[in-house]
Image 1: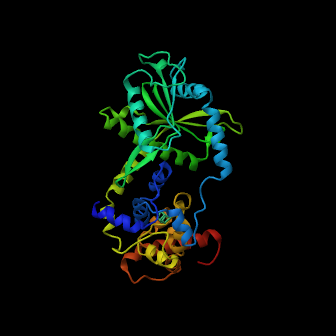
Image 2: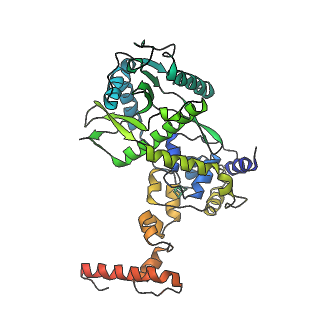
Image 3: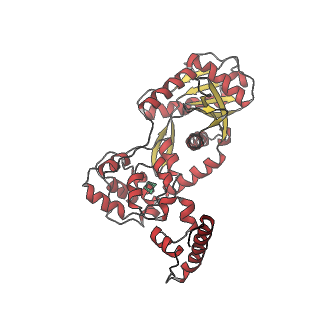
Length: 380
Ligand code: SF4
């Protein structure tokens, strides 16, 4: 065990580590400047448990109803060996709909190492050879081409995050359609008049990019060209207010760059750890007051976006009360260097800063306050 691994294990304490998944990896990209999050996630600290322990339980995640509805929609879309799904994906990719495709179910077993190996073997074999054995629907054209399409249900992919193996399970990987692998994600949020909720769409794009990255690394590890995995992901959602599935293509190139950069940063946790107090620990089993004191010593970077992506958001928001960060990143950046809302208001009201570096910001704030007063017809 390296000294950094030892340090992370000490930070985590005796509570079992929490594994990353595509959602948590995607969430890492949401606040790359937060040391607190990077260290806690790198150490595998159970953040939902930690948040609960310190009195600020997380309040996001899908409801039981939404999860059930999502499972029902996915089962419906994948029925009949994925026949409807194959048509949707092929049509969206603009290739002829194959007469048949192999369907390989790689999900459901608990032995993650075995599942990862089996997934890797069968996905790699789909690059060159005939369809994997044990498929439910015989393929029409073992020699390749669109008729030899292969669908892999819930393959298990691996990705190294902060030195630890993380297992990821995309809904489906389609091989040999349009000459490449395509990640297919089935989501239960509706697409209404061709438009999906932008936040949900953005989250799905980042999660899908994580799968694309893992699949590319799998191919590269086998000596294959990672570009055989398309940067275009197929998203299948219910259309309008029905259960009728529609497929959309999302280009995740930008998300791939962001995820890769953040994972590289996680790999440099030893550098981040140099800025963290040597006795910092965050074992959810510890005393709540001690945990709050401990967390306060590691730099956070709260922004309202945290509420949708980090389990510690309510704690960090409470801690950041009165700071410009609580008003959002654009406000914080526009007020660069002035963190305190009271100070911002005082400068806007005419206070002259002792620090000359704040003089320019103070002049801009006074101008903004005067313009606002003019617009509202109130005294400045
Ligand atoms: S909620 Fe807190 S720990 Fe999580 S990303 Fe935001 S600032 Fe960092």
